[in-house]
Length: 343
Image (tube, rainbow, N blue to C red; front, side, top):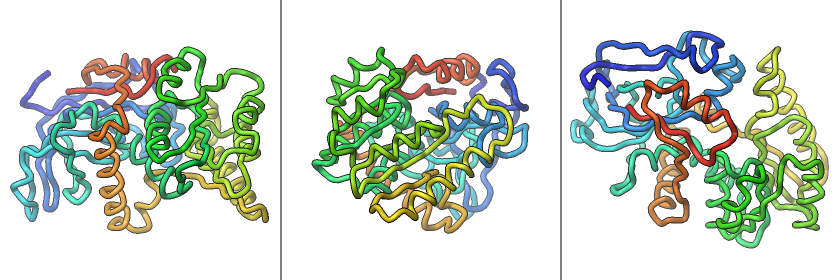
């Protein structure tokens, strides 16, 4: 790849992965308060899978450069930014724009990556890790001795979530297809086959009194089962609608329906709680609070990675030029962890 110039992946519209376009240009310059990052690792998250179909709740109009997060080295700083940042490895949550060799980011959005943590390792826990951490500790407030259910326990968020839950002292039940069960057992997770017709019954056998928290990225009809599996005082955290990924029609409707259901459940006088979680949601309310929280929580996740509480699960590493292959692989449902893109 051309080390001198900019290379970025453009999503031109609703296209198959092979319809993603590579665009070349000049390396961007940093404006006041900004830095230019030379990308070392970005990844394919579920958000991009939805954006490709025009199904992400508030995606920008086509064409745009996808890429929810990245890890890289600061190449240059703009006016008002400490020049000492040049050469340091950082992570950033962007929502879009990460699938590029060079990216301009506000310096205030940077989170330092600790020494000894590789770029690809760090990448697996940026959006996935901070999502898992905030759901576990800020929403469900999971404590030692509790039992939690993680749907999609082998996925990008799920694989980090089960490890963080165990580090917090929780017992973890995880749904995944049969091929991932041995790996989950090795982690100490009690696996349940999500393809079975009696998922709820299997979970009840493992947790007769119900579970203290459910983390559900699937949405749809199964969300009602998730709610019913909660013990008194339990918390449901819904963080996606994977079941509607390939649907047609309004991209807002599944989310609005979900929010309505959550609101209704919270109005019931039974001591249980439901949340719809989106890692980006707080940014519009207070950018400073969002940044402070992101930095604090992602720093905790990186520390867990350093301690070995979380082991980075890299499903595959592919160059930006093979982005179609990377997206196909991420969408195949056959891999565990995160598909990482390198320059």
